[in-house]
Length: 368
Ligand code: ADP
Image 1 (cartoon, rainbow, N blue to C red):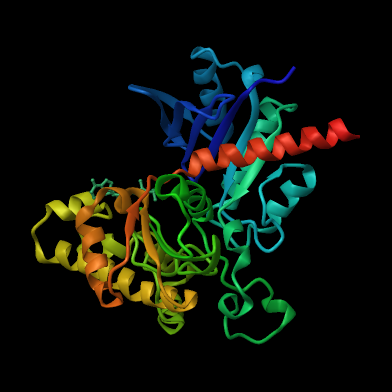
Image 2 (image 1 turned 90 degrees about the vertical axis):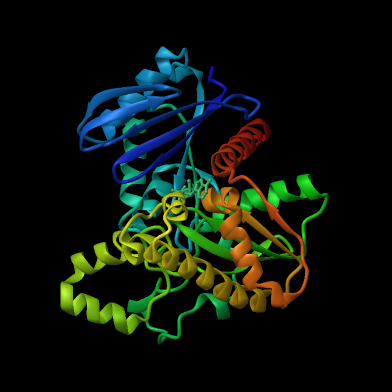
């Protein structure tokens, strides 16, 4: 007899964040293991426990241990549902993780070397701890499978050794949740919706009739808007120079971790800290963020052939009226259009997707 709870899992380079959903898909608990690779911390509610967390397997054991102390044994789980950053061109819908799907996620490692290996190691750690527990995956890239070729292709030659070098787009789970939730708030889904997901990572998606037709992130989550620590859009020629000047590893670290709001301000990647700071560098970083958000929004609006409504989500999008207003102000040339703020709902979206996959699997079995 299987359990009823779904544990949504987001495994990164040094953390595993989980959210537990009951049979009615209400979130009941969050458990996070951070500082993996050393003396880590397991956080749940107000409790923060220091724990040695040498690797993902130890972090996962600590999370399962914490769950069990809260009365949720492994047998109470129906499934673990993983957020997987990259599904490439093959994995474009949520699915149950079979050995073939695990291999397909592994095949995407060259596309997402900073993310997919951590998802795989979490998947393997769950398999080792609870071999019979079903695992599902939702892919950040999947929502963008509807982007037309003209928007997807880079202007590179059609060579087999360059296969896979295309725009994928990310934050798909957040945009899928927005498309599901917005009609509940406003009664309808706007035909041409300009969606901003503004958090530490940030992107815009042009959503036409509920489907992604363009997005600002590309081959990797490094492209597009100015972000917390990522540079966003940058000329490939400048990247080539960085690689020549600094070497590959340092260039990669610079572009991913030392750029964006942090690089421009020299103060913080955190928008709240920058908003509190009156200094010119913090203000310039904020201006840069808003300018490029509005400017790339123009490109997204063109991809949809106009605009009917705007939605903001993500930590900055949900919480900072200053940033929303600055971006809206720069788009006021478009005339008047409604704008909405919606809480990012990635975890519940992943739990729902897993539940749908498992229900369909069950129906298949019942039909057999
Ligand atoms: P992630 O992309 O890591 O999930 P979040 O979506 O949580 O990140 O967004 C984090 C960002 O949201 C940080 O820059 C943080 O400063 C910003 N943020 C959160 N609350 C506020 C607020 N009240 N005002 C301005 N920025 C905020």
